[in-house]
Amino acid sequence: MRSFLGLVLPDPIKSDLEKICFGLEEIRWVSPENFHTTLVFLGELKPEETEKVSEICGQVSEKSFSLEIKGVGFFGNKFPEILYAGVTLSDELKRLQKVLESTLRREGFSIDKRDYRPHITIGRFKRTPEKRLDLYLNEFSSFQTDIVPVSEFHLFSSRSGANGQIYSVEESYPLLLE
Image (cartoon, rainbow, N blue to C red; front, side, top):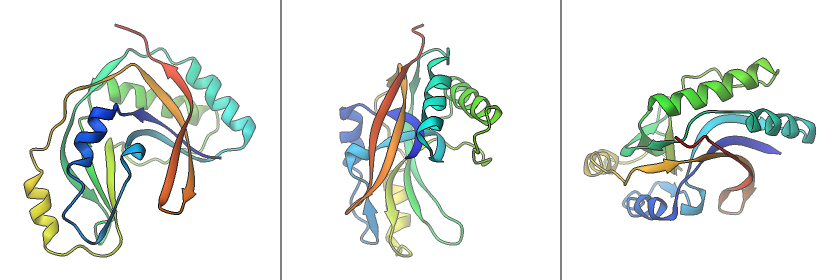
């Protein structure tokens, strides 16, 4: 099962994000039900590996916190590939991500060594964007949602569908209340 650990966004936040998903023709917009923030990408897992991940996640004792979503940007090497809404890397988010990543790595899971850059993917470019991308980035540079309380994180599965990936929460793990 293709898997990752991440954070679910509440419906009002998904709705706010959906309102900025327009104006670029060369992009495939992500469906609002798939908006999330990835903590650790795990890749393809066997059932016994999924059980081990679940066991590890069940022992995490980090405190609940809040997410701040603001601004937009893109990732890509030579050309833009992913359009995203920015997520502020708070100390609490950084700590949760690091605890998960380092514990999983110590247990033998192969975790990507890229720097963690929290974001919410809102679109994937089908081809090189036209000049409108600069206008779009400018228009939504001050985009911001309400603060998002985070009291749990989740194990997601990912599978291919006719209109892109379909993400499902497989298991949830509570964070400590402050």
